[in-house]
Length: 192
Image 1 (cartoon, rainbow, N blue to C red):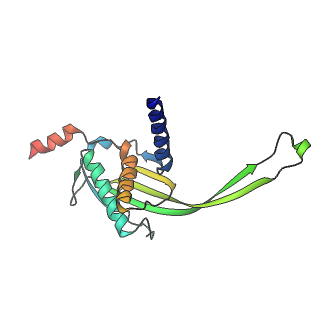
Image 2: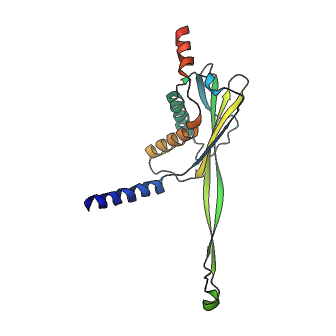
């Protein structure tokens, strides 16, 4: 009996954590004519024409995003090269005000007996944030990959939570970007 209660508690707690976690939709697109596995070096910077959002585009968040992108790219086997990278990873953020309309139709199948019921309509205002990562081939400044996450904004209460949230979102965005190939990296080391 104790095991059943413990299992039920774990399921309830797990559901609570999933319900409280931020939900972002992540998508990507890329140039199919470019072999994305041929690159090995990168640099990170904000997008050139990025409009300054006072919250998401703050200097603190720019540093968080830059650090998170660098960590994810290095974990994929790419090497940071500020001088002459093969890839330039640029990011931008934006926030849009959104409104959701909800309808609670109380129409009963027995309306003819009880009379017509009310239809409650309510609106819900929220902010939707997007974090976009664009990857350019440095030669010719040609975009070859783009990934983005969008969802309802709810700022974490602690600084550490913000760092972890941004790292998680960046990791999700770059999840489908291919890892650097080991043979490319080993050829580079052998040339030295």
